[in-house]
Length: 113
Image (cartoon, rainbow, N blue to C red; front, side, top):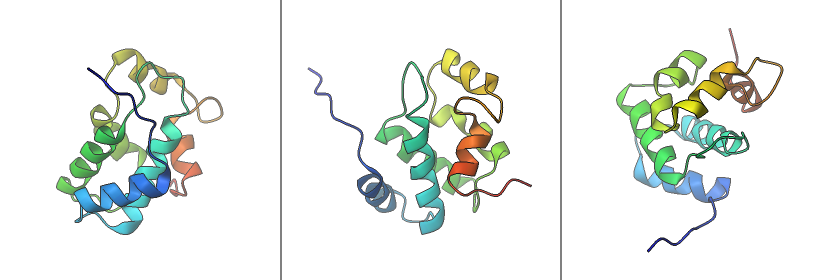
């Protein structure tokens, strides 16, 4: 039996990730949660759930990540995206259309450089 729950809002997701991955900085935790919240607005076949947010935060922590970058996001995208078609969709987006990774990062305050 499966019971479908709505995705948590930012505050709830942030609190859960802080509890589950306490070694990740508050700033990076916020950016992780913001990124996933925005990624859920993309037309993907399977949107990342709370478990994927936690897995991604854990991976970033293990990799000693202190700042999000496009390179780090792509290296760890397998934590968030489960279907190849969704990954291909994200890779096909340019910076000015759709929900590209670069656009999502800019939207959450990550400086590109």
